[in-house]
Amino acid sequence: MHESAEPRSVVVAAALELFQAQGYDQTSVEQIARAAGVSRSTFFRQFGGKEDVVFADHEVLLTELRGFLAEGHDDPWAAVCEASERVYAHFAHDPEMARQRYQIVRQVPALREREIITVFRYERLFDEYLRSALPGIDPLDAVGFAALVTAVHNHVLRRLLRETKKVPVSTLQTALVDVRRRYGVGTDAVDSASDDVVVAVFPRSMPVAEITRRLGAELR
Amino acid sequence: MHESAEPRSVVVAAALELFQAQGYDQTSVEQIARAAGVSRSTFFRQFGGKEDVVFADHEVLLTELRGFLAEGHDDPWAAVCEASERVYAHFAHDPEMARQRYQIVRQVPALREREIITVFRYERLFDEYLRSALPGIDPLDAVGFAALVTAVHNHVLRRLLRETKKVPVSTLQTALVDVRRRYGVGTDAVDSASDDVVVAVFPRSMPVAEITRRLGAELR
Image 1 (tube, rainbow over the protein chains, first blue to last red):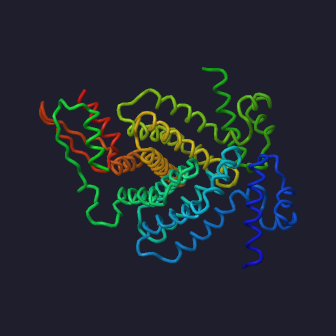
Image 2 (cartoon, each protein chain N blue to C red):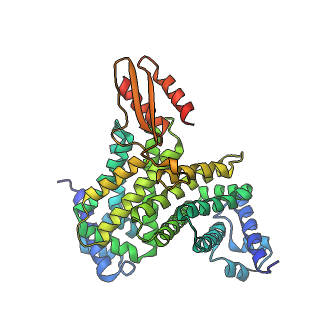
Image 3 (cartoon, rainbow over the protein chains, first blue to last red):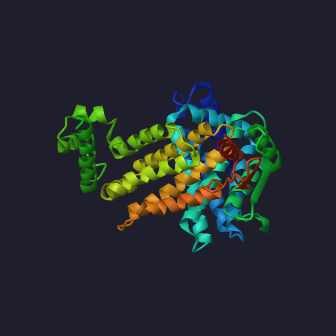
């Protein structure tokens, strides 16, 4: 095992425990270091400050995704979706810790803001990747696809963090298939948007609620 | 003319001039107040601090949009797009001041972060509006549409701010028509045929909640 890798996650776990037990603002770096069994200087070698402990996973994930995307992919749209799924899988792997972190972030305005900025870093990474992998792409398509994947990802992730039951990765995958379909970059040839039209015929006397129910059943 | 409204924009203009001439960090509230001909206490009655001067327009715009959306709209998807166009029109009306602000924001990391957070507030406003205007909407559709409109808006706005030539509002409008098409909520989706039978044709990508809304409007 790598000597300097393990303490970092130990520090994160200890910090989250303290934040949850006594509050983020009430917890000092000294207390975290003591609880994790590391020195104050080790803490500051590993993290810039208290805030960085909360977002440590995202730093690692962003670096990993940058590497993953740089590998080169036949289908850049699919690669962005896979990147999103990787982030999701990371948090879904240990939902309890993810939920603990989420509760802390929710309660501290500065952390909420930092989270919004972190989310934007994923969006920008996806945008920049699409533009480099697909020279000549309309920037609007890169920007839009990146924003849509990121927004969908976050919505599904937030469901995982808010609910006590499991939200499987397939929920995200289904949503991402839908995103690709909206951009006409799905996997099967049939789903070009213009072909995909539904014609519904029903008596005018049918209640709207019943039409809705039938259409809903039909479309799902 | 309203007595307290005018000084606010005067203070903003004076502040932006100073920020551009001598740098954001190098400019004090005292200098801004002096240049604008207001007292320090007037400044702090109008703005929370130096940062707020830079984002004053967004606060006004967000409040305006909240009012506009609350008016009630036949087509909520179109209303979100119109909201986006209103913001664009505001900045396109005085591109020089918008460009001055953009240059300042770009140079100061804290302002860049604040901008990302401000952008997110528009996105959340659109998301919440769609959910309230279209009960039963799949939250993923609200989240996605809001994110896509916001991302497209920002991209076109950034072109306006970076380029010296004009970027007409029609550039944004075209991009927003494209967004609506991706969500199957363009203007020409529902068609009624005879008195006794209704034939509805719509893209498969249209959210069921939107089909319901349109059918309901058509049938009543």
